[in-house]
Image 1 (tube, helix red, strand yellow):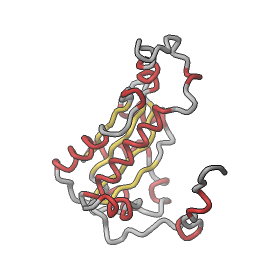
Image 2: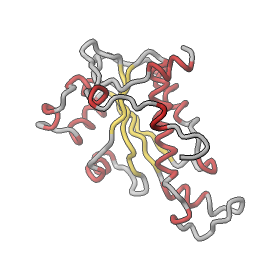
Image 3: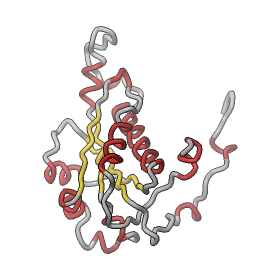
Image 4: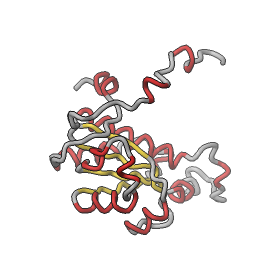
Length: 197
């Protein structure tokens, strides 16, 4: 698929068929995630891959009933693959304390924005785009119970779950989020400023 087609066709898919994904595609999703930009080549990310019973354990731990039954897309919970994208701030602080960067104090205030989370977001986007390229659907969503997630999966304290990508074969029951109709896509003139604001 041409890159412009991948960008144009990328949308959040929330309903999946209950059928497995080719393992070669899973490996391509993960390999492409690792090609994301990374400040100072810090690579302060990790990806927790959940399939089968592990994916069911994720849903049970973080989306228990009745929360699941109240969600408007029940087929999301059939996604055969979940990739949790995690960031590690300490890897960035340590990387920038090395001689070629020289910020030996490791002060977090030196960072104008949290690049550890931004870089993981870029990796998540590459997962989403790779899914489209492979003919699959995917959705990115946040994890609001960090403590419960850590406990359920033994995540080290230095990692923060930025979000989860659910991936699978798009179900015919999938429908777009109502947000597109309610808010709509902003015109370029509202978001692109050339030369000055």
